[in-house]
Image (cartoon, rainbow, N blue to C red; front, side, top):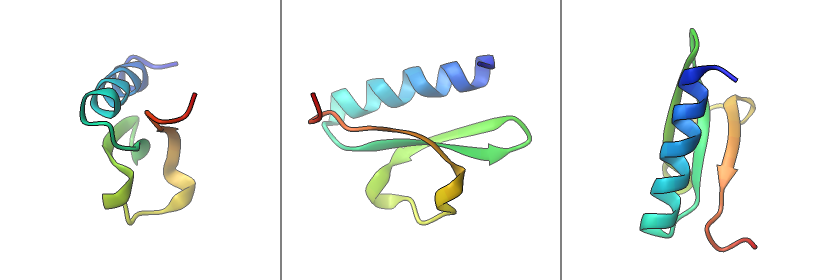
Length: 57
């Protein structure tokens, strides 16, 4: 796992548990990753790397 991906995972988990919303990690190209609320994502579904759901146990 690259450093950028591990950082994105850490930030996504923090955002999901703080705001209590579903958050996704997506591949933005050239080794870059993005994090945003799942409700706001309208990009390519195949670019999604992981989804954090704070309500799932």
